[in-house]
Image (tube, rainbow, N blue to C red; front, side):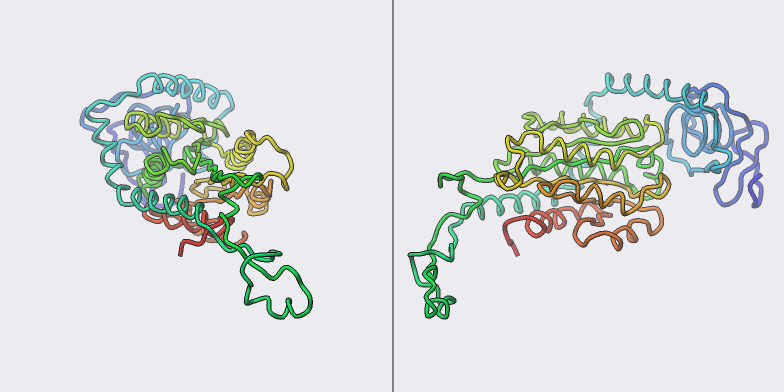
Length: 400
């Protein structure tokens, strides 16, 4: 029994035990995973093994319990089983994983966009409408700056550079400057060719996103971020992007490949969001953040025809890892993250932390190079963060 004042169970079954602090002591052992019975009244159920959407119990779909096949949030206060009570056999984990996989496959088949689904999509769309406008303006400004003509210095002819007076007196011949297209707007032959920014977004669809969404809206904010990306960047001639995901089951979930033409369509966008929720709900516990980041770096480089860093100047590449910073639980340290950030100098890698357990996110920022990790606790923060990254940390243009 976990220490603390005891309360009877509220699910009408044999009286169980749970503490006032929200910890639950399950009354039943782990047997077979199941969805559980549906309660038409949607009353809270704690510590049992009967009802779907209960918390702190065994075997059924819910939150905070053990041995259940997948997460299911019915909107109730979550009572959490302790880490000691949460330990179950490998066989029980395997049975739950098998049922979760089947449920995810069925959910993928069932995804559609009816009236109720459209209402949910519209709510998310309105939440990021202002940010979509802001990010579109930022990207358009970047595109316009790429065409500007600039002063090229250290030339043998052209207009005399006033900052080179002393150099000229000492016999230096390269004291002139001339106007020319910016390097980003030219290829090696001098013909206009705007360099693209290639962006890969790696979204956190791990179980903790679903589990803790009721506490801080982390899953909803991740969905808002995804919709912001889909609505702002689609059909932009200077930016190519893709969206992948990572969970306890996989380090490379393909949501939106590069150059997906239907990415700007509302139905497609909502289906992407639904798939993200489904993965977070049905995946097993675990963390593949570092593996996902490494795969994303490889993916964004795969289209390059040159293996030489010196020759590869045409495109600017960025990988954005969105995460809830749940790293300590899985033994991930700042040194591990730094290795991924520095994996390939041709790719700018940035971690965008949209949630935190305690002060974990803040401590991570202090232990890593400035500008590589960013706090984004609200979707309203994202346009400014993207602008800072694309125009400061490796970007070619100063838009301030």
